[in-house]
Image 1 (cartoon, rainbow, N blue to C red):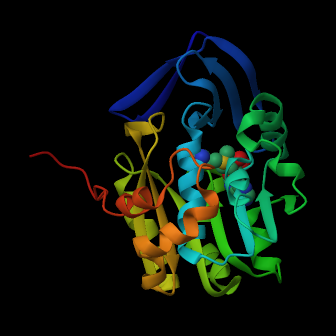
Image 2 (cartoon, rainbow, N blue to C red):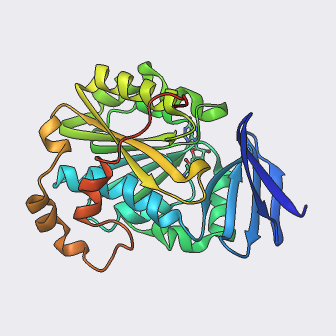
Image 3 (cartoon, helix red, strand yellow):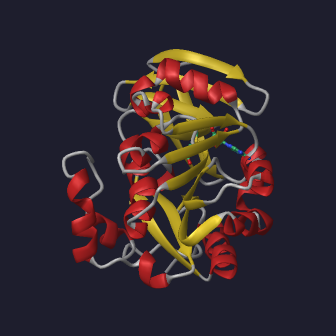
Length: 280
Ligand code: SAM
């Protein structure tokens, strides 16, 4: 294999050179490809979709973790659904949390990520505050009695095993597992290529939680360079934390993030995603 083509729609694709093939196979749930590209470093692909690269994964992981945690301010118990590469777990553990439960459906994603992309999790799986469960996030959330301050849905796109993680029934279960003042953060696809997905996620989350606010993270290796994320909760005020409060909360994290900072947090909500395609 000399190159990898990621098709984002019938009208747009991106091609990365495969400078060294590290792993190619099929798990019980999905196709996995891991390769090295001279520009982006190691790249993890699931079912033909880029999940992360060594070069820019910190932007995604910092934004999906720190935006809800900083908006909350006092999170002690956090649930990560998906995220088997461990990047989100690593960022959550930078906060003074008591426990982070990570539930990933595909054991092989956890194992392959630790083998080929160890820097992404950087020891997060063996942190004493981490509880790692291999299983389906939709079943876990429907069955568990545990409650959380923040729930982060770090899933694949709504195809294959990730599909149910975008359903209204799943969001309703998440709401019952949230402690008062709790916040949910959701990865919501490529902002510019999947505007319908973002609109649907905002609509569903808003209906279930009361308030849902979309924001964008620039991630160069995702289709069209921007990933849409959404935070939801019962208090719109908490989701729009003032800069002064974010700055105070950020103090213990200073120097420990590469992309996230309070100014970026606020600005991310003003980068308006495009709802719908069309030409002028
Ligand atoms: N940053 C990524 C992206 O491109 O959006 C997402 C990262 S992470 C690798 C996504 C993970 O969600 C995958 O490892 C996948 O196995 C997991 N996943 C998908 N459906 C799931 C489910 N129903 N329960 C738990 N984990 C699930």
